[in-house]
Length: 474
Image 1 (tube, rainbow, N blue to C red):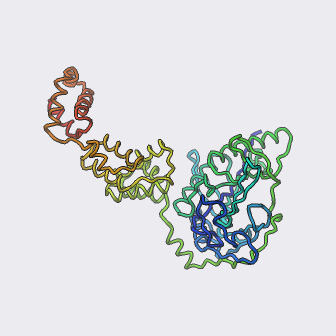
Image 2: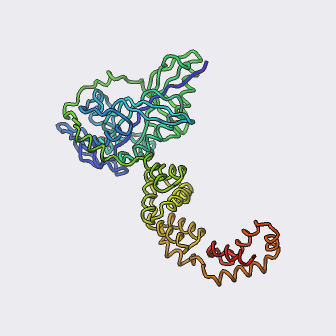
Image 3: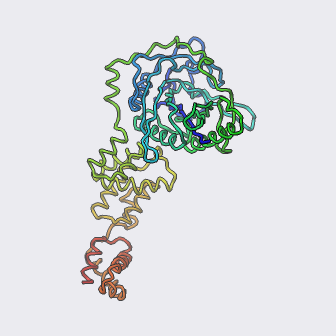
């Protein structure tokens, strides 16, 4: 029998607001446990929440980018359950009137465009964090994350492979970053996905689904989907049944295991949140959000190619991450040489990032220093070898480029007498190569120029050296 998987996603994105969704506590990551907690997010009796307006605007931004209908009159609901990382014993979420509905995102997989439906986007508050201490065999609770604003992006079950899911999530991550609504640091949990998956005979009725919670890397998501697909197929082919449940993925072991039976909406006892007024988004507010949407990656790519003549491949590399695009645009503006800036960032900077395992969000290279180097190489003050060396020094050590070049004597030799002397010496020493060139073996020219550059300690002006060599040979 030919089986196919049917997959839907619930993607949780922490919104990049400075304060929490219902109180003024900071959302900064990595602080001491339980230092960003107040009576509101700690669930103390008698306190009242107050909605963060920026969180609403960020949610609407995402809805617009995903072609959703914006719910003009939305509200919050209480989702009741007990987990130790939610001190209120309920979560404020949106069941009955989510802020965005009925959207879609087009993704391209293996040359085929596929439309992924977005069922809804709703706002909610994040839970705290449980820290399992193996030494003391205790579980510790950090409530600092309680109340950090989340959006949950719920797709239709339109995926049939790990490749489709990965492509969608990478494109969604790009959108969130360019919108400026989420830092998407999966290693910090600010972007994570729940995977709902079932298998069925190809084209048949939907099977029983399982859910895997809070996967926070593209690699783990792909491995989890492939494992769970195999597991369900093996169960069905052996005459057993798939149990609807929530499962946890162990990426180190490469297996999933059952956590609890899967809850349904009635079990959460949803009811309207009594402490928060409904949200009304009027025409003026919606229009202001639309007008303030930032330029997205696709529009940037088109502008780079149209305005600056940058190739499609380089434009794609430069817009692969919002922080890379920001660096490129700063260097292009400071150097007034967009083409050279594109070659630098898409080439040498990306190479150094890969070599040093530098994430785009951790890019700390000084755009002004890179622009100085572009000016020096463009004005023939340094050659390409010195340029490459200095770029690496700026990237890794943050050196002052002009001081670095002066200290190492990297300025290009353009003195006609010095170049003529080096060329003359090479012609005298390399008689066989000279004879080969004059016999029509033009590859010998490159060798002769290389020898002259060597005598100039790699600092010769390549164009002047080539010109002098040709004149001497002829």
